[in-house]
Length: 429
Image (cartoon, rainbow, N blue to C red):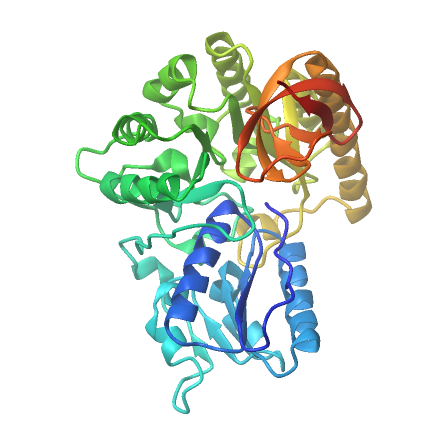
């Protein structure tokens, strides 16, 4: 999950979008901004919510109240996964003027008629009835050095802890022609790095003619848009890494040596109770295989602490996964029940224990990250500059630059030292 967007200073009649959650939401927020402004909407704040955890919904409510205090004369529109799943809860907030579902948020007419007299306060339809993705060419991403391209939407799997399929619907793939057109536009507009994103990009192609795999799509994209300088994948499922993708990691320098895995747990019994499709052994084997093909590859992962029925020994298996898979970038989620999911009816781990386990996972992950940082001292990296004095390497490592550089450029950097948060380097001449 990415950090939430922040309401910035803007003209009083402008449309602002506050985005929470995943990279797909970041992509859609730019589409929303273009649609809303293009429809003539004025003086509005649109909050694009996330439903992955209860904390994400709490942050969205907090942002709604804060936006209303900062811009008391603006109208507030709430959309995104939390709005799709719980529309009435947001409609009941006094600050909210309109609630749009995940399909409705990408339809221009809903912004053109947002505050007409006869417009209902809630416009949220059955997400499971949707069979296609909404294609939008997004020319750029305000305040971001890298660009996101949606390749897939929705999810056909039903992990017992997850509410997201009910917010996003079933899996739908974007045709390759649309993906290539979006990538070409972004490269033409100066973006040096593109991130392919979706809800479950590993399932790409299952609904398209010929059922192309994710690896086949990536290969064709890099062939059709040779101008792409750096390509990165968002989170993938370790159960569905195809041979074409493995071959690309081995032989395609433009595919960055960094992969984020949706692991969730390191214990086989918990993985079964989560209804995940991979085993502990499969995840470890995949990381070993990828490291054999691309020795410098770096892994990130999602891990949930304190899933229902998790014993101390089961939890320790998750801790051990950090070393077994050599994970560097870790997202730790303390388990929180989502109403309506099977896991919410399972015997819960005591909240205090969940908190302690999450802290141990984070501490172990910090140690692993610090070891990685130390291993990079004395090496060189090619850094995509995000802010004048900050960027990220090919391996997604945060790098602080001693000499400011222009955001959006890729610069060679010699890594001189590190602290607990980032690498420190100087642009190489």
